Image (cartoon, rainbow over the protein chains, first blue to last red):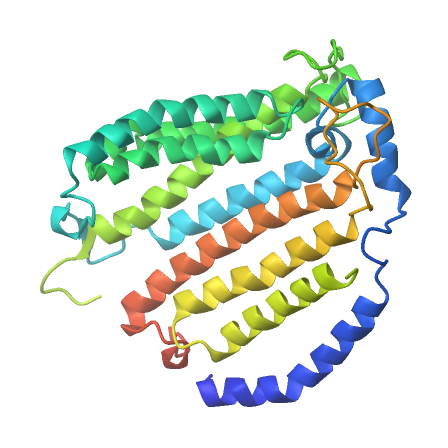
Length: 252
Length: 114
């Protein structure tokens, strides 16, 4: 569709959308005046029943654990889509083009900073994943921090080293194990507590690392999956930028 | 100013939508879509806020404290994951479109044959 057609369509549809938006906003509760009970119930029971102190993670990995399964498989499916779309096509092959790596000439100071960044990011990511049920964090947040750690090698201008440190098979295995593990934790609920994704582990002491039932395990499974998923997507894009090229003298 | 968060959400939605409609570069379209989605984050968080409420994390506050609603915060987390997946898929499509049509202008897209 041409730009002019798009703008014309928007001029026609825009006022209608604005009217619907205004009607919708008028029906919202006043800011700060929220009275739905669902969240209050969660705030009330998660500490006493499950001994979890981060109610957001408690909702994510306990009350709505089944919903998180769907969320996780959306991520899984989209990673599948990206790898399918960005596979090496007919008439293309792979060759490393160091000149196109924008950071290939980085200084020693930057390389040292990247080297220091990697262990700190791994420590922070692991902390976020395993303390999800206690303090802000959880599998999704920690997984992305963990994925950022190997990506710091990019700052040092060494993309091929990233491929050596994180072989495609390893990150694919991490993603698969995370997705399968989360699914199996749900099955554990079915077997030991007769409801899919019902907590089946002891609640422990509130505030301690081994508490909140199976939430830390859920968090680790999701963390693995998210880390693998993001590394697969990032390397797929970086391969396109730095490795894949059209074979010369051949039409697609 | 009790309507200010809602106004910010509506403004983000409008700005992002205008970016999608008026875009001449598909990467810009995708970034605009991310702006549209960030309006939903603001809206969800604004809806769940209770005046004087604290973050729903009981690690270091008394259990009787007034807390904001954690449900909408979980929905925002879901929303962020969806946004990341949608952006990744769309960017992959842009790369393929650029290979096929040699352009990243949405006006240059043509139907695929065969």
